[in-house]
Amino acid sequence: MPSFCALLLTLASGIFFIVGFTVVKHIKRKEEASILALGLAFAIMLGMVFFDIIPEIIQSSNELVMNKWAKIFLILLFIGAGGVILKIFDHFLPNHTHKHHAKENIEEHKSHKYHVGLIMAFSLILHNMLEGMSMYVLAKESISAGFLLFLGVGLHNLPFGIEIQSSIESKKEKKSLTKIIKLGLLLSTFLGGFLLFLLGGNLSNSMLFFLLSITCGMILYIALFELLNELMNYRKNKLTYIGVGIGILFVIVILLLG
Image (tube, rainbow, N blue to C red; front, side, top):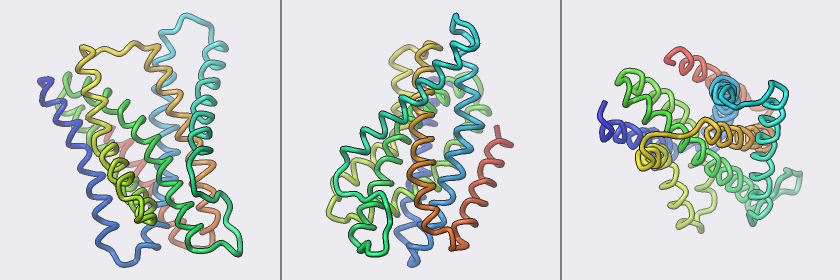
């Protein structure tokens, strides 16, 4: 596939976010949709880490000239660094509450939802830029393989679009920032492909190893310290388990398509 067509494929992947954003805007039972999407996002993020990102980290580490234990140490170090970076970013976000409590008011709940959506969007933008690089390279080599990756990326972007939209729309007074977040998500995969296009289509294994490890740490931080915390507050709601179950099915479908 020509470079231009491969770039168009990375650009088209943003459509799935648009679908997710639109679904939330046109349904009446937004709270139920948010809980369902929360379970979806949690399952898919963990699936992404263990079945996609970690195998890629291991593969990219094969070119590093060092022994096995040194590689493991570096992987854990950079994954931890990713979590720390997002924690620092998290710390400086204004107007959010980390713990639900009996006297929590509506505004506190909205602020916390907005906060979760914001850091999820931040990490997904970085992750999708890396996927955009992979999609660009793969699509140049094989149309069918590039399209399958496009579909896989799109399938996990769809529920994230639903969850992020349901989170960030809770703070209607921050419309400008919300628009920037959405634009970043829509273009993130394309920006990754375009950056690689400008670099001549090459990204060193050591740089890929570093970026993937950092991203892995960010996504684990969100899944375990933000989304899981939210899910525990809805643990008595059956939609939580339905969402996680559908998310697991999404992961299985993506693995089968891959």
